Length: 148
Ligand SMILES: [Cu+2]
Image (tube, rainbow, N blue to C red):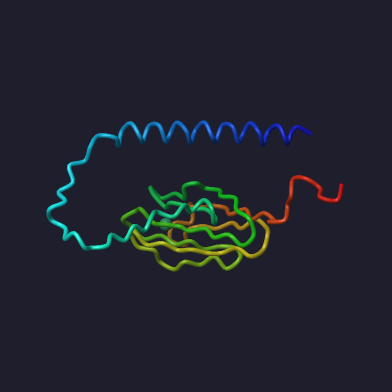
């Protein structure tokens, strides 16, 4: 079985990608910003709500150009998928396992937490050709056997 090697290769590739993205954003964003500090009062506490990383708790799917992107997401049991409609027309997310968003207008999101493992197919009930899939894996799938 080469699955261990595959995982390693995948992890290395991911790291390389991340490093590349970080380097790119650091280069692009390092131009000094002329922040007009005079306009804000000195005592105002800034609420620094850092953008949460959705990847840690599940997956995000964008609905745009009449398609789900990515079309297939894989999560663990107990994690959440969040769909956000980027199109100017309304879409829905409807399908297996009680997936039912109702109409999502532009900018609206729908989240669903999956508590059982399995493959859940869904579609847009307004545009049935729009389809997607959520694969929910058992969270206890440990790579190494602990009893050895
Ligand atoms: Cu649609």
